Image 1: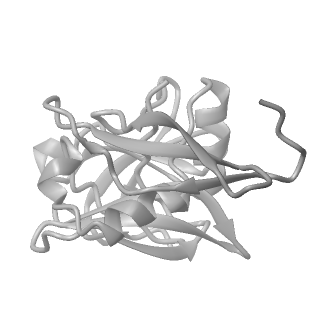
Image 2: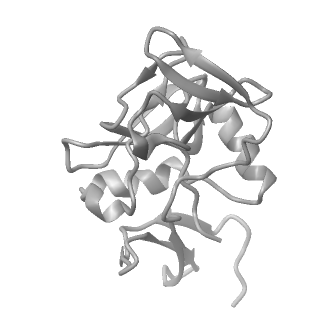
Length: 196
């Protein structure tokens, strides 16, 4: 079949299903429109990794937020952080990144964060956060250097920017829904990449 340039339209359809391994599968389809209006669908499947993205923190400098008593490592660029003390045990080793750091670091290893459209599916399908996989409520780091929502909020950057902000997905320990919003790119959030 010959498809003329400009006649291919990509669109996202609803979540295909949740794998037994508790990772998400997104079904992406390619719709090809021909002259008589016929359409063919070619699905592709995307899955979220089961754990948060991490980089090697060897050599990062140690700091303590004296107001909050949180000890953390900071990367050489000053845009990535790892909890090492003063937080609940499950948060030790969790890393937060600015949006630009998340883009840079995932690109270095050939990984990709979900686009906002992929997180949009989670919100629109009212997907329960329990189906999101292993959730560590690592909170966030504000652009002012303070940490917020430890053990209650999980924030995941998307790969989609909007002006000086970027879209993210938010899960909260007391709510069952997955939500989306946009935030200053200088904030520190967790990263969950798409598989392969």
